[in-house]
Length: 55
Image (cartoon, rainbow, N blue to C red):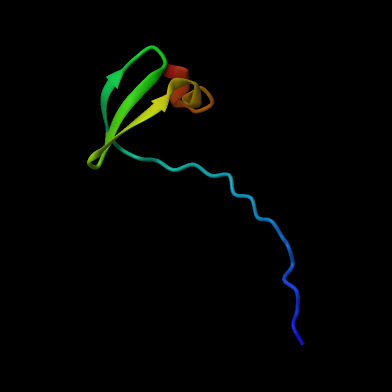
């Protein structure tokens, strides 16, 4: 007898903290180096965080 799996959805809303070197700040983006990669973070994404209050 086989059972059909329950279609339960799990949603997770959490934050992580990463340390990196700020390489450049422009009008609408911040470029941060984490490890060997430089990532671009839109400043609009930071507005909801504690960091966004200082921008």
